[in-house]
Image (tube, rainbow, N blue to C red):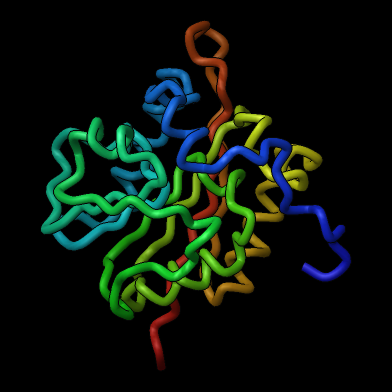
Length: 211
């Protein structure tokens, strides 16, 4: 992250995260096609049957309907969003821009999700390091996002980057957090589906298995 402007991770709005997100629409910014693409990604990449954490989960986790977990825990700054998320087995209200440390033991999750949330983190490197800490060896972190975001709360550098550069930026953050085997990709809306307009981009990294 050398060479970044000192205000790279500032937000336009100084309103508290709790107040701002507490009054936002609970629906996802992604359109239905993009949500379906995220669900398909989870179906092929996310280990089921174990313990999974959805960071900045919001009201929708985009899980496959038949996915079963030992635990599926959501963490978000918005209590109303967590209460509306029917996929969760439990939830924790936490503002990651104030409290970076995750309230979990080391190597306690089989997988972690971060969908449409990285844009709003003012300390993304520290949060990703915490995610790497709570992941079990071999477990994936699946970061996904569309090109839409809330300008009032997306950090300056996210808004300044082109979509492809956001993928590179995300990859760099994940590498610095100690994640390996990075895999990137995107799903572009088919021309014949006019209701699907959002390109979905994803970066998947895994916690290394000690040799």
